[in-house]
Length: 105
Picture 1: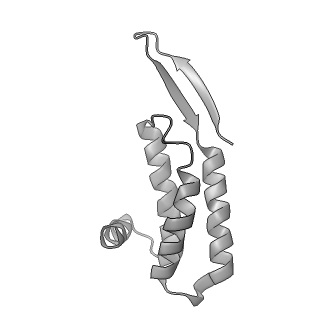
Picture 2: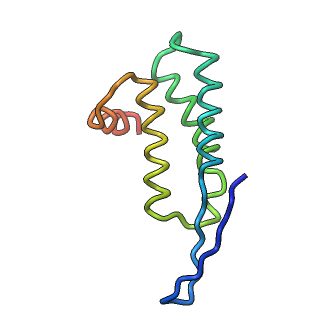
Picture 3: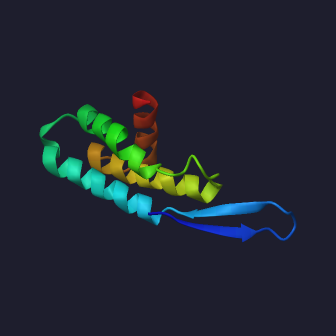
């Protein structure tokens, strides 16, 4: 489950919602490890990528549509996805990951 914290900004009357996304990231990594453990390297990278995007991303983004996300949350999501792409495609550079994201959508 997600922990939701409310913080009142002193210079405005708008409350901001801070989401602790550690639980979502842990669940996403569990889903990825479950999928990757079953299929391993026996399937193509395209199939692995498609399974992770259809099954895993919903776990990662669960609950975020109800709360606004800030830039640090978006960076954390991107980092998590990049780690999984590094594992699937076996690349070590950010440029390669950018190319993969461009070609796979």
